[in-house]
Length: 141
Image (cartoon, rainbow, N blue to C red; front, side, top):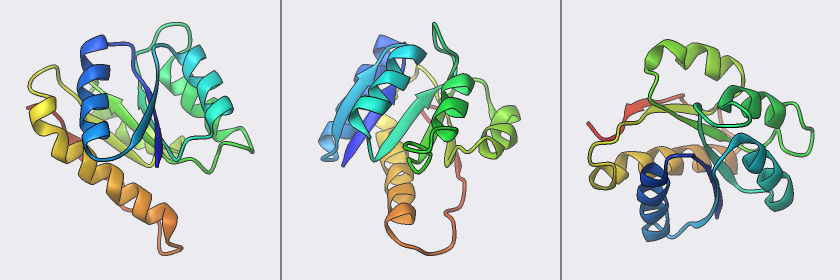
């Protein structure tokens, strides 16, 4: 499974990439919104992890562009945000599959939450059951 990680924080990107690689996923990363959108179009990943606070093109703009693209709208997108749960409903309305609150503290030690959420989303897209529950988790607390 190929995951696109769109994250501008080097620390967050490295911690998440390590966790994903340990879990057996192939990881592509992008450091800003423009690069992330371009990479999604070029690589057609199985899942996208999307930070909301990105340079060049915001995470919300990337989410909208991905969900508005007929070739990419099927890709589940997990939003990683430090903004808290206040934005959860809006992001889920915009098409996010899940919302996870991130923190700079101990991300690598809390990677199980991230991997569990990813596996739940991917299982939901592989089977044609009811839509997956939209979990809200806190990472790194």
